[in-house]
Image 1 (spheres, rainbow, N blue to C red):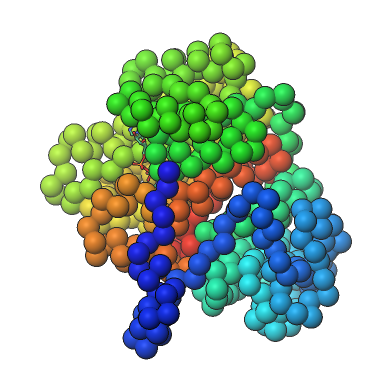
Image 2 (spheres, rainbow, N blue to C red):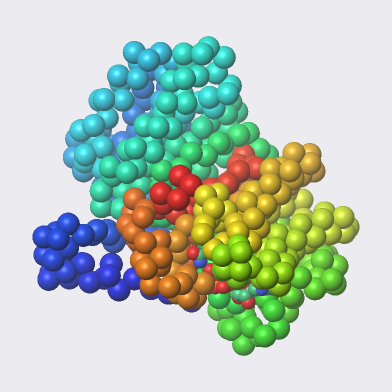
Length: 437
Ligand SMILES: NC(=O)c1ccc[n+]([C@@H]2O[C@H](COP(=O)([O-])OP(=O)(O)OC[C@H]3O[C@@H](n4cnc5c(N)ncnc54)[C@H](O)[C@@H]3O)[C@@H](O)[C@H]2O)c1
């Protein structure tokens, strides 16, 4: 499945590598601790701090305890620091952030700041203060050490269920490569429980798709692993591993939307989760780009999700109540990338699709989000020339590429019914890469 960590990262963790890197001032990427079933991640306790006007300290404390994380008084090392700053309304109150410094220094793991949704704050000073927290969080993420991540949840009124799910995700090992990101958590209504949840992942034969199939299977989904017929053997191996099923589907085929919709309606009583993951690159500078390289990338990466989604929404029974869509965008779509006008157009287009669909889908009880991976160690990035590849790895706050499982964990969380309050958004999984940040 996913590739392992990069060789440089492994080298600088050896004694000679460490010495060399510190003498030469080279990056020393920390080892990220990822989710391992039955392994306790938070060895040290967490601390929940409420600044002026905070209202959520007790419930957040309880949620952390329920998810197996001890919450202490914050005297020693901390595995997580959660700060409710949503009640701050004056510039003077921002001074309270300074009290966090000693606690931040002792945190190795997760820092999570809760804010209000700035647009919901009418008073100009209050709105400025809440918006200011984004700059604070993004900067703190750049200063964090040892694989500690810092993220911001903008909490709308009435967001309890979704907020709980978000707090659990952002304070867990599952969010190891999500860093320096703001996300809005709204109210949302979780989908009704089903005996067997069904997910379909396109491009599931390898890389991020295969890891996503595994994470979704772990959380109890039957996964329909879809990919081109040529990926047959690899696809079968993934489907076997996750005890799912295979579907040979070229997402660009004219018949693909109907075939997928019928498959899901007739065999599975509808999908609870649809992951538009299949994607290709055909990198070339714009002046050298031929029609085929332009059209093929747009066909797989953008037109296929548009057409498949349209048909799934139209076809009776193709979707289960509360179905959740996740589209794989890319930070190159947000930032632009040399040699990738075709790819970036397709990936930015997916953000437009998510934004356009959010309201009409919400009206039917569905939700749609995008995940924008940064540099991830997959066959796609292994094929890059060495210099851009090395740059891609090191230009993030975590100074390394992510693994397919990091993206899969984010997709897996957004696919959960209790993440219902997260809708119409883009979650970057990029270790706070500088690109488009
Ligand atoms: N790897 C990264 O660093 C990175 C970064 C940002 C975004 N992404 C996006 O994440 C997704 C997965 O990336 P990956 O690195 O795992 O890619 P990958 O190349 O390893 O795997 C892509 C899969 O899609 C399948 N596919 C291609 N064309 C298809 C078609 N017409 N129909 C059905 N399946 C098709 C391939 O057979 C393959 O199994 C892509 O959408 C990619 O653009 C990847």
